[in-house]
Amino acid sequence: MTASNPPRDESHDHPGGLPPGGAHLDSAAQLMNRISSRLGSRLGVVSLNGTRRPTPPALVLVAHGSRDPRALSTVRTLVERVRELRPLLPVRLGHIELNEPFLPDTLADLGDSRAVLVPLLLGRGHHVKRDIPEAAAAARADTRVAAPLGPHPLLVETLYARLVESGWRTTLSDAQRRGSAVVLAAAGSRDPDSAADTRRTAHLLAERLGVPVVPAYASAAAPSVAGAVRALTARGRHRIAVASCFAAPGRFATECAEAAPWIAAAPLGAHPAMARLVLHRYAETLGTPEPSHERALTSA
Image (cartoon, rainbow, N blue to C red; front, side, top):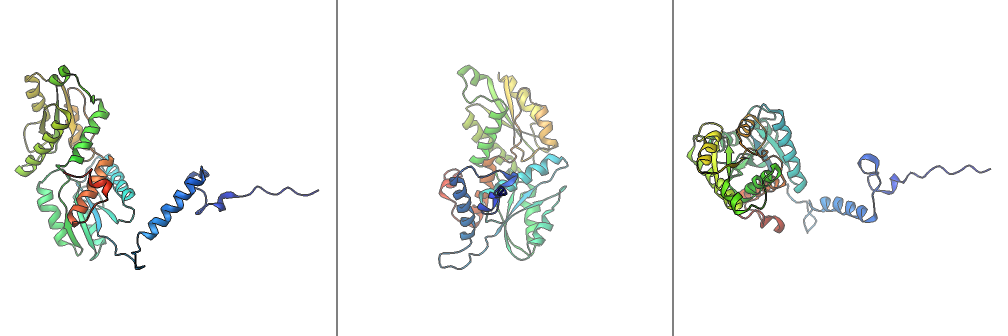
């Protein structure tokens, strides 16, 4: 009596074995896509004449830092989204305060290599004008500092998406439009350039929504969110939403959301448009062309 053959292990038929979780590839097309992706990532580091391409400058995403543990998790997710969009680009994270890795430590790890620091900040203030440039100047690395993320159409795209997620209607009747408004809640700064950037973002968001958008601040500037809500209510606006112009969850974002009389949007977080905006600021700083499919999305 012949012994039956043992079941064949088909994992060896696939490059790299089974996908995560042990599930088989669904089709030959998926297998080819997987092989093409791996091959493309290897060919991307080689130029047409067969020599290895130079490593691009590292992108260092500079976050503020927060005692709220959700902030660090959110920023790390954003870093991963940037890496997914540009897998051959070295992407690092550094914090100004409160969370590790701190920016000086991240820059020290880069040695004397090149880097572009992209602030995860939404306007020109003390951190953008002083803290980040000073850290860059003290590092051995050959660094450039990008502009803050705002104002920019991709920032407005994210604010709009977060409002819609919270319950804002994409279409309003004339009556609803006359009774609606948005408070754009930001951290606040004594620097007039920071306030100008927030006002510009509010103007762009108002154009997108077709209703008034009033900037308000969690600290260091006026009006507060509660003050902006009172002013809009006095003008006959009774459906007032709060848009959260904060990069990640934290105390300021929470306090501003609690002052909302109606809906409050989530912070910007790791929205795909934010990842594209980070890469736009990186390319803009280097003066390098962006992929054509992203160029239209990031045109100011």
